[in-house]
Image (cartoon, rainbow, N blue to C red; front, side, top):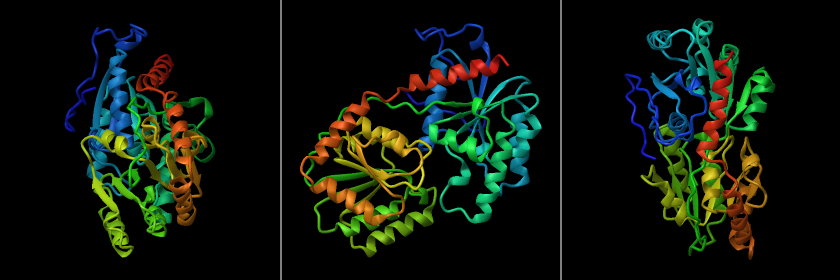
Length: 377
């Protein structure tokens, strides 16, 4: 599907006309639905990919979707930015359904309080901002409070995993009956042969502390005597200082010729096709779209038992270890690379998982039902 381009200064509706799309409810689809997110929809992360595909698929279901880009939102954003955000929300007509991505919503407790009585607000939470790695105790506490207040201002909440649903219920007092789970879809792709010599260990994820590349580098340093190559695919721009620390760590371990920082790539499918094992020991994942992508390519997975990962990666397709434990991670990688038949066994399990993964149409239909429910309140 061709990506939708979107100006950050104006909102353009996305709507598929009568092109064979399913007509779910002709009265309902006449509603304008506003999708609010911070920054650039083309940003290369799983969260933005979810937003973008959801907008496209809802349009194909016949819904008129109007994307609205906000400035980047944070705890320390200026009063001028807050005024601009409130102006954009205030310009939305009374009674409209408005979904706000959690990257913005989590710090917009005051702004959502201003508009909650005239707009039907829906939160989209990939995972709580308060659970990001690298926060100071003060930042974590402040985010917990602002997110909790913001969730109290919405009519419904959309989450991308059952794990996030449980967290919102238990830690943020979000009522169970207001939460809808719509896991990300996964595009079908061809299976990797998983027979490279030397084996290629693939990691896909932005170079941020939450993704725990530092733990992976430490684990690989323990296995320098084995024959392998590793490719780290992902952007560095979210935390340039952390990315530099990772490069310095690789240099200290003398692994510059073994671990390759690839950056962003035009076609990540090629990376999956040429890999033999997928490894990413994230400290937390709200869902983990890259794990689903790896499974869809038939790749055995090695990951940390954190966040939603255990719900997504079964024992038949991967090895899960304790978070922040480089020795346990090294042991799992060693087992997969040296144990006869284990890689083939997990490869078979990954291929079995691939055919069960939901499509983006499946995800959009769940969201469509949520919107219909909210529209009738």
